[in-house]
Length: 478
Image (cartoon, rainbow, N blue to C red; front, top):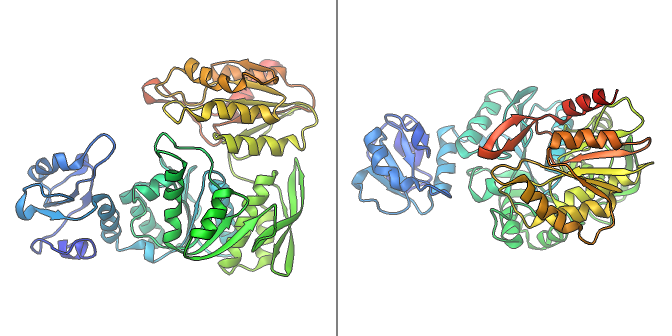
């Protein structure tokens, strides 16, 4: 691609009419004739390597201050933003060729995006998915390392979707993806806000900073669907400038759920909009999932999917891996695996499960290392609010001492009367939970969800699938 074609929407001045072989911000991927973009990260500033990249073969560098490289440098005000736009241009702007639906918030993104894709697919629309568990192009599953891929990978993925005739893409849009301009110049037809609770404060300086990051999605969309059961959602409804609609499971809204009935086998509710209401049945239990499905239904209605197709698709959907997922045991107690790793998410899953627990509700949980330590005692308090017994253990300790993480967690149980056990090794903790379970009990394994690994010291990933470990633990009981 000619440089002037690539750069025309990003910089006012360009170099001579030269051919560019690729675009990258990664020094390890610089090749002869490529355009290197100097991006400043948390631990490395690409500007410091610009001259070296030219020596390595780069045709030019994009920078945000003068590096004294003469006509080999292209100046822009923000290289991270420029990189997203350059990646989009490199792939011929695939984001303009798809109907884009984005979902942001602390909790609920994965469930909402997966169910929307299921409904769109059931209605005959080939759909791509970008999310935490995996990426998908129609029925093809693609591994992912980030909720929102890096800019080049994201545009490459959208390009594949376009070439494989996808009409829609439904994606989880993380705060990292927004702040770091990973989505380039993407514009969304519909954007959803689920809620905002404490998470990622190791990255965002405070909750206001976190909110402002999420809010960025609603500056780049046509229509917003916003949860007004959340205080930040109510604020967003006031502040967003786009066309906007509210949804709720607690009060009247543009879209709301009424007559809610929740069982261990699923839920039913009346989806209400204006003077019309529709009975929705789902195999996914939990009040928080009624909220998720209310958002889903609102989105699909806005997308023009007939209501009968929406209802039919929801009724046949079995749920998302690691989201209130029942692990078969063949015993007289139940084991549920859920990704809940924030205080609010943990409270939501336990509150919901408590409604249909016949015996004791046993919650096994931990907190990740190298992450926001302030939420650790809050996780404990949330768990103690609903569980009858707690098992405190590890969850991706990374480079922190698991015992010290658990010490932070236990600070939240100082005034609690809920009995708890500490079993640092998560495998042994799961075995222990199975061993103490009695008839009618429900064990909630919180934090791992879809993850099939543990991250230990040195950032080593070891295989760790809780479904397999439950099966192993049950054999030990025989």
